[in-house]
Length: 254
Image (cartoon, rainbow, N blue to C red):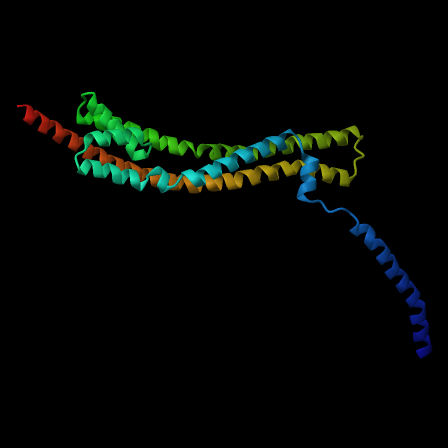
């Protein structure tokens, strides 16, 4: 019995060592297969759709940077402008107030300017308030329009990526047809991977664009609403000052 066991072990050892050697020899060949990366897929999938998506990403990046620097309280509703207008109204300096709002480009200054210009043309307070409301609506729309490119790019990004994917699939299946249906699974999978890469680019463009658009849209709405409230208050104070100054002048003349 021990002799038979020893004989079996001696017989099995050579085949086992041969199997291990074959496995080690085959391992480098499989490991030598190049791994696909984002850079390689981008280089292989580079076409007109990739160029359009890249340009759209550059535009989206520029809009995002502009939103970061411009859509702030210090820009939409600067405290210095509000403070200066209140000071001139409180001190009854109508000429200096008119001069300041004519030069200043803040939200509240533009609204108060529209009301004062209407009064200077002889219109009543209701007409002056309507002019101020129109100016406030125009300013709010202007701030929201700064965000609109992100909304457009965010919605068009996946569609452009899908169009690139469909075009890539058409090319891949056309190549299979030209080869008489003899294309290997490796060739087919590589073509599909390159086609789907456009969809990935479109999603990578849309996700940050729509995320930033949603965040800054809420912020713009909050800032513009506050600016509308402050502008309405300052407009009423300026019109009241204008009326009191006119009454004082009339009384002095009489």
